[in-house]
Length: 311
Image (cartoon, rainbow, N blue to C red):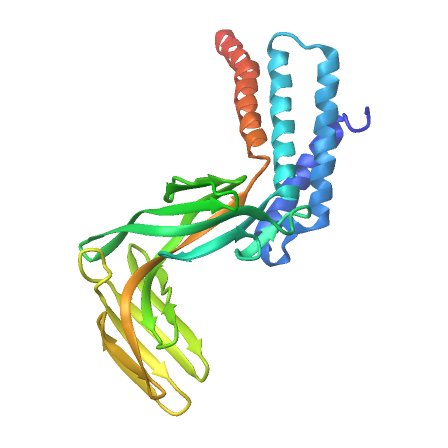
């Protein structure tokens, strides 16, 4: 314990960690924050901090030094929370069109990154995007919110409004609105395709461009919002086939040709991408933050007050 409670070791770990984080930011492609070296460094720092905290507890501090103990307890709590998030946490992205329903499982989420103990995750729920509230002002699109319906196999169900600042908390996960865009609904004869055209930002201006492929064909589209909610806009479409390329300027209800088949633009819907985060250590991080603020106030304010009186 005396070895881990060393102040020299603590100072050395702080310096090494600061240097390591600086290199990780300057060299992001190396993914140093995901390496075993960083995990080992964090574990060593946690052991050092825990030993120092235990040493302070055994000394039974009083007065301002009790605030220093509270500060160390807050740091330990935050490190424990970060460790829980790393081991049992995860993050991915859920893409939903209006009226589309998907199970909330890791296999459906895009770019899923689960901790070492959470490679696969199943919430037991499915979620459905009921609607999206979007307003148009001076030709610009403003997202308000979306409504998610959720249900599980036991028949439990509910609805919740989700926005950029208001998440849906479900089965230990939080769902935040990450991105949104327009989705022309194309009637291909034997199937309906919701083309989720991507949103691209250029300063305070947005454009809606995307491409998709079908066997032998490539489609490039740019959507120009119109109407009260943007959905009655026009679509500039390029259809590139094996022999030629056709360009169309379409409105909802109109059609275009693909290899002798007529495809109708039936309607325009919306899509949303939700960030799904699982952070089991978040309560410890909040508790640790409160303890740090309280400990700093308890320990440092009397020192500052004394210094001002001496001056």
